[in-house]
Image (cartoon, rainbow, N blue to C red; front, top):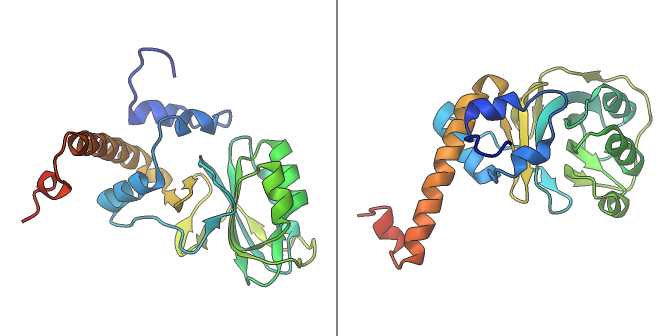
Length: 221
């Protein structure tokens, strides 16, 4: 962001082109906790992908490219890499959790393509290699076995991932706490609210450092 330009929801939205660098938004330090609180305030839904956790310490944010496949078919995930653009996140809904649909080869290929992260509501493998690549992966399960490269699934369709609806183009944010999904149509309002929450939290922390109790700050009866 250029020096002197104020941070605003509109300026964030301007960044979301195919050439967008997710690291620029990460620098604004909006956590998944702040975004989830903002989602709850704006939409009534915290937007959390339940049960899907990071394989390592990560902080990512980017547009979703969706995939629907079966645990026996990791070929659809390979094709999704071809579809995904630089700075995007591949989000995969898998029917079944006993066979991996993502691993070292897909992570390496996605990384070379410029994909910044993969989210798997299913199983992954090759954890040591993925960590060595420093490619962010979130998953629900980890197993050593995999299915086949069938390519019989679908891409760019609405999916239910971690009990949350995800559509291609929605914003995915992930860190050590987990993942949240910001619907594209609510992006401006949610980011605006998240920035407000961040500012309020910073003020609370300043008061705590001055010796105020949290209960007095929150005016608890």
